[in-house]
Image 1 (cartoon, rainbow, N blue to C red):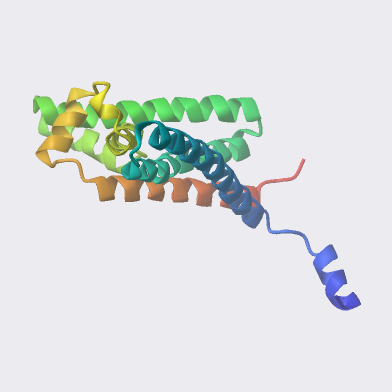
Image 2 (cartoon, rainbow, N blue to C red):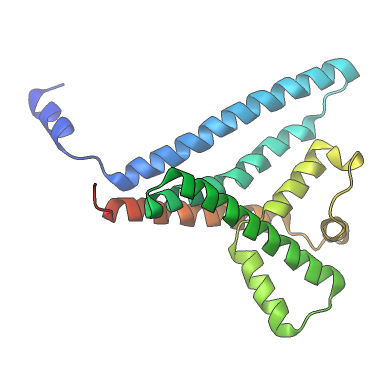
Length: 195
């Protein structure tokens, strides 16, 4: 490396938004790696014991990563805003719970069809704007074969059986919510004052 290039590289400050983005992608990658190792070893053990290969179960790994990504981004956003790791962790758990409730409420309203138009619209807006943890967990159950051993939410099973659950849109809007949270975290880190 030339001395002029080294001086520029070592003296120019790193873009904090880029640092947040790289940390986010690194966290998603590490979680994906560990989950992948777990799923592959478990699948190999089941395949060896049962003499069959549950191939569709491997798709559950991708859905798990899509499910995890927005909440990692939300945790990073809360961490940048609050500057406290414990509060960010507790806040992201609370956001996950609220998203879960919004997700289940949407399917509950659809299942029982017992709401006013304004309530239905409000619930639908919350459903389509927020990550969908209940949809993601239900899809993981379907892909991994767990649904044949354990019962799921009847509203979700109804949505799946009736074709009302739009899996691709659920996956895309969940990813989009994570991308928005990661972008906001990067922008907030870029504009934040250093201690």
